[in-house]
Length: 116
Image (cartoon, rainbow, N blue to C red):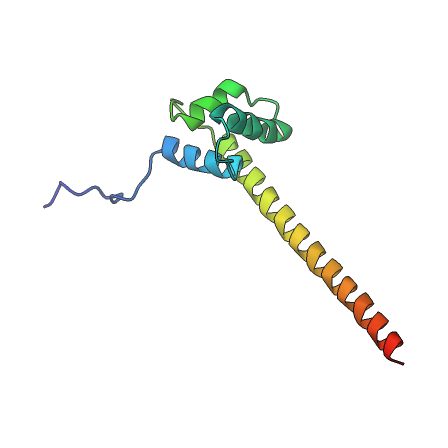
């Protein structure tokens, strides 16, 4: 019997690692010289819109992997922020595509009128 191998495998992450990874996604893209404080403030602002229980200290504790426990609602709220951001990006992409089609149709229509 080999007891040296964990049944969970070597790829398992701790809850703190998972929460920190999700928080990185909540933070989103970072500026080259953007201070950590402003990134955490942005994450806090997004999470606070979902639930008033979020505090700046809690966001910082998750970011620094200092939290002793991670609540399920915190994980769900971070996922909700990430999914909302993806949905908004898809909406903007679709809106830009439709606007480009309208511009193309307008310019094509103008060209055919001028050629007559």
